[in-house]
Length: 348
Image 1 (cartoon, one colour):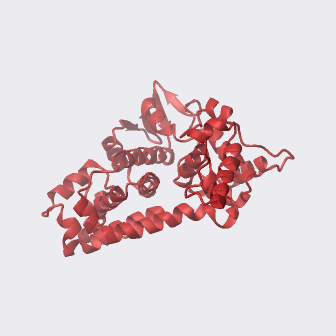
Image 2 (tube, rainbow, N blue to C red):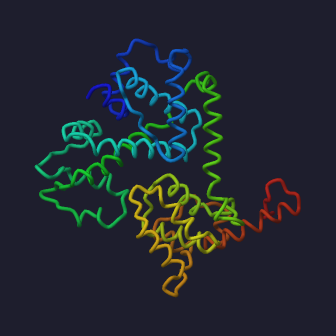
């Protein structure tokens, strides 16, 4: 793979070696004026990740390819300086999504090279990418549609046969895991300070993105009152994580129960890598009661049974249902405003 390939797939080990071979010190990347456009592109990369996704620029020559390649470590440093879990997941997802779009256009030999760098041993036949079932399970476990179940795949002697489209999707999950597992990196305080104007702009964009779900279709809904399990599910949904069917049902029914508009919920799942609008719309409308039955979100006991109880806290011990948590927390916050308590905390 040459510098143009490394620019599109900067997470492979060959890209790191290429950067090491360039004649400059790493600190210069964050201070020297000659790298100003690289830093700008690194910031843009993170902002695009927070927004609608990273856009790959047209690479016309070696200089433009190296600029794009070097913007990747800058972006990683910016994400690490902020060190926000939501941002890390959103950034990893966006980088992987952009790489997925490029991988589908690559010749088979390059796809195999990237897979090997990610630790996957693959073979190719005339029409299939062949991956060992252990690698398939490792990455397809994050994909919850029924088509990804191992039983629905062609498997011979422990090897799973996939189309290029489906293998590229598996590759995307592997890329996302590599990027996310490598963040945050340890960054000297002086570098974070030097990038302060960039990190402030990113924090502002991040804050606006996080608050999007609390306006518009949510209206009077109080996102600060979400129980930990639903806050966890919502954050994952917003960062493109494929939720397990049981958790998706729990989140959808909870949001409908507290008054969120169906269109808003459909839009929430739009960033899911396997988003199917027709199927999602049918499921949301079904839960809302299109067949005459309005579904209530699952109880805490059911959430625990399905492994969907996350971040249990003190208030959780006093309720038996996510909706009960929501109502109780809303009451506590309103009482705090009335009494003038700084945090709205209820006395034990």
